[in-house]
Amino acid sequence: MATTSSIPVLRGSGITVLRSGGRALLLRHPHEELRIPLMAIERVHAEGRSVTVELTAAAGATPAVRRVDGVSEAAARAFADAVNRALPERADEGVAVDGSGLIITRALTGSPPERRQRIFRWGTLAVALVIVGLALTVGIREGGIDGVMLAVAALLNGAMAAVATAGGAAGLWSAYRGWYLTRHGITVEAENAADTPGRLGRSGTYVYTETAGVSRTVASVRIGAESIQVAYDPQDPEKVVVCRSGPRAVGFVVFCLGCLCVGLALSFTIFMMIITA
Image (cartoon, rainbow, N blue to C red):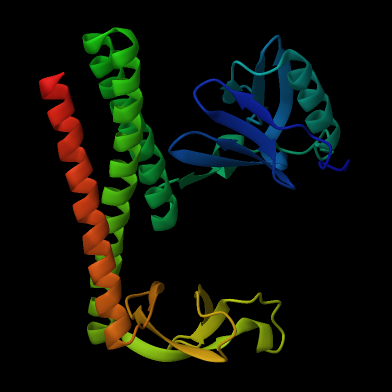
């Protein structure tokens, strides 16, 4: 069988991706991924900017197909040629199997970190659009050079308000989670990963072992400390926080409250600018 390492990745319409995954093709849609073994593929056809994966079928049966549209025409031809060369040889007298029954479907719900990152990206974009829209509204209503200066001021204040408000709120949520896990989770010692045998750690990364014996890593700003205390959720050991001392926790909460108040004050200033402009 020919190697599949040179098979190009096809990116089609609707955020669809078709690529090689060793002895299978992986067809990824926004909410699911299909694993199509090479032994389930009869042939791949390139038709302009479309690629059709024809599956094996019993004699006399209509073969099922999987189609990807909107790909590069040159990539489609290269993909089809490469996959067809990599297909396993079949004996003429062999009985063809139904390729549809060999496909494995996996739902793509996304991990909690991925979902948080996606929410953060979309939230940031939405806030940025709102701030720009408000700044333009104020500038247009005022007009002239005063309108330009007012729009710039609104834009800067809006950006600072968004950062301060989001940072303060996120910090307070982090402080609450730390308080909750410290009291209701499991607290263990985490060793400096750079000094842990058999691990390629970096400064500021620590390793802790949960009750099931699985080692996990956590980042900390306490660079250089031999060990730190961390608390994790026994139901989800990946939810972990670095334990803070009493004074440090109080100082962190006060700082976050200050950021939140500054952000709300700036937001109020922008609101008044819009009303009085």
